[in-house]
Image (cartoon, rainbow, N blue to C red; front, side, top):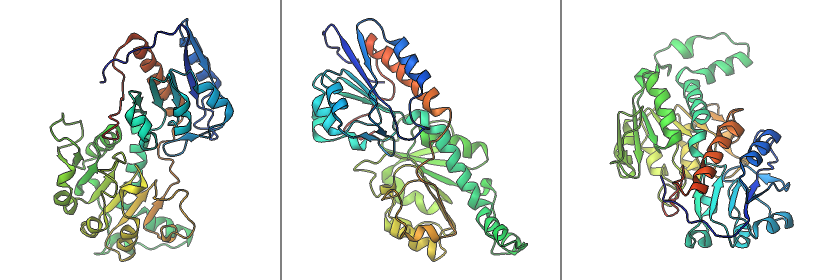
Length: 354
């Protein structure tokens, strides 16, 4: 929970809803716009710019004249992140609700120096992202990558599944290390634990209450001790100066033979070259990757041609319920809290980066 936000005393208050995403799945629907308008109390002006918004990654919108004009007297902004040019126009801004989970692109010097509050949408993305992560884990635990290859060749061959060298396992034989114990990491842990796979989590402060699904928690300082014990490593932590490169080349080289790496957070959390090397030499069983250091993933990347890599194009959060059932409920609840001077949900610590 956050501290209450002091409100301006101007007669007309403005909310800018910048959600005209180019992707149909992320764009605010007409019904959502109607709900926001209906929730607006007297004295509030709600503006819905039609400039196309970028919903990828931390989001962003080109500083088009329509948006620059709308931001001049905006008190609240609801969009996919907030590009710096728009922030610099928003002299009356008090609160930003990001429809994205990550906020790294919002933490420019002027934002850091301001008292503008940022809330994000990480908590609502936990369910679909966790299902994507678990699906990818099953893909390698049950040798489905081999099955897909054989099916394409019309090959009936039991040897990779039943030989002494087979990597087919049950989840109850595995141990997972989840780096990041927020909404996404906790959703992954609940699912894996329910399937018999014990989970250890790492986070900034180990003293916080232990979320459901974890048998214990440590801090990032414990990662070098925990990594060699893990059969599955899942990266769900936000990208911050502390977590950038957390799965370094040295640490990747120390992973248990046959380990599975899952990254559904940000590409810069791991060393892709080291991951590729350990996948190519067969030390790692597989990698489930939804995010990359460079997006779109270049066609020259060796990852494309590796059978033991499952690639998706940064779509783990996709769900018909996410936008706009969950996201809209979060915003409307927070907007009501904001107007009442109550603490907001999902407020981020700008200095911690999440």
